[in-house]
Image (cartoon, rainbow, N blue to C red; front, side, top):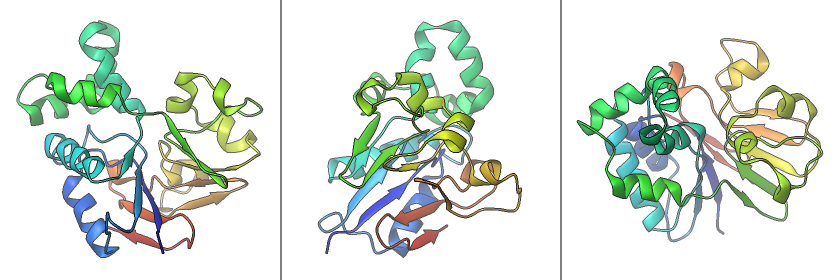
Length: 209
């Protein structure tokens, strides 16, 4: 039986990504893996992580774009975005690449979709604006929205990252998948000292590294 797996906000922790996939016995021939964005910035090695994700996609995984990926795309042409991106971990990414991000990587990031929809759920990086049809959602909201989505959205189940679950709960010790009304948060804070978590969307089983 095909498993639907989801992981988000890897933030340069490529080795932990590899570990959690091994723990889950991930098989690209049997499982459908969804990566919900933010592959770079802050972590141990953004360069190797990006290339690992590109390989996963080559073998059948689905990768979405996150807000950090969006900043990396826009930064070379927008000084303000570059300034903000560097503050939010872009400096570490440029160090890992030993210079600018290669054009082939930026072109790959540009082509990443912003969401994936199934009959029973939607996967997206940040969330959805309440009461707005999926095809009418603002590009920026899909990448950046937080509180309005967490507190106000009702509808088809949404699997999302972007906001560490400790932020959503207000409990700094909460480092698990968060289940709210019609939504499931899977960013367990790998960029802030927490674990990186892989979720089986259907069974609810998780693996962490």
